[in-house]
Image (cartoon, rainbow, N blue to C red; front, side, top):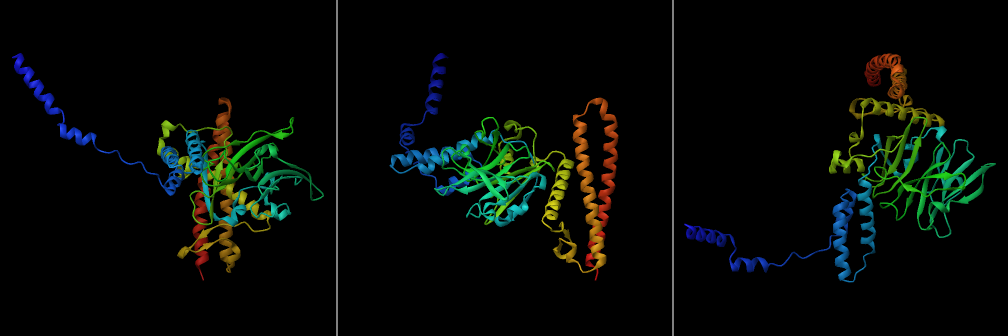
Length: 425
């Protein structure tokens, strides 16, 4: 019995071992030849935030090029960007991006959401401070201080601060602490209402590629700005990201970017500023969703309550109307009628009845927007209030919600009447 068992065991073992010819064939197979990944494929990986795959590909490209004694400067720069991208992707800020707008590059300033209380963003060229049409300046609310971009003697854009005295720049100072190496391109400054928090964009080695948005604060004791910090994702990307600003009056922020766009177009993203930085949990949201959140390819993923988004959009509409009025223009709107025709102003209408009907709809929309802004503020106060205070506040919120529903119905009704009046001969 033991003999038979041993024979069977040996037979099975020999059957499971490849033949000598098979083993020779397997071991004699040559490994796949390593190849250099084309530059356009590397660029594509970086654009879709596959920084991990780009990292491996770039390391392979560098190794192969070094063996061939070829230059690897570009690959090393992109490898640094890919690794920065991986670090930033693990700490994407949790921020509500409630709307976006695609505009021609030359119309970016008009699309920014900034009330008079938050200052103004202008072209440096318009004030005689630069020959570069892309250089910009920030003018504070009082109109007595500016921070602007201007080329230095080497032709590199740097940031400067100055006081405005008798409509002229005085006490000019180059902000060397914002780009100590002297090689970084600095532009697009914005100072918050506190007069200390400065945002700007820099094209430097500390970014992901193109312009990145940075933040710094002014140290009044030392009389200079602190070392700038990259504000990370989703605000920054491998593309150009700039014109970051926050309007504290309407509690909305926006920035411009040429990611997710084609040709000479720019995307403006509008968001609700956080009082404290919060980040997504990579494990909870998953890798693919995290990339979408960082790239801003699906804004709905960033949303919380629908009412919060609606209220933010209403505040944005108010801010835009204020900007139009400050510029001497009538506030605009969009009313779609038959055949995809859009009406943007009552001045486009020849019928007095149509103008009246459209204006009634616009007025009621603005009333609804004001109510929704008040309702969001009330909800925020309720969330922060003590338990003893919430009873009376809850009653007020319910009353406002009922008014909101009634106004929504009225707005819809007036919209139908306005559309009908526009189409009537």
